[in-house]
Length: 65
Picture 1 (spheres, one colour):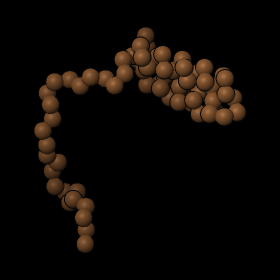
Picture 2: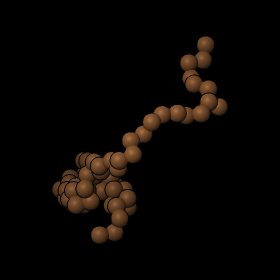
Picture 3: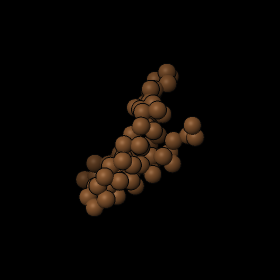
C-alpha cells in the first residue's frame, strides 16, 4: 500500500499575499555571526570549529552591508 501522494498531481494551496517577516534582521544575524566567531576562538577543541563553520555559512548568505 502506497501512502505517498501521486507525484503527477498538481500541488494546490493558498499562500498569503503579504510579505513574511524575517526570522532575524540583518543586524541580528551579523551579531550572531560575531558571537559564533567568538565561540570559535574561545573553544578551539570543543564546539568552536563547528561554530566557526556555521558563522562562515551564515555570513555567505547575508547581503553585503
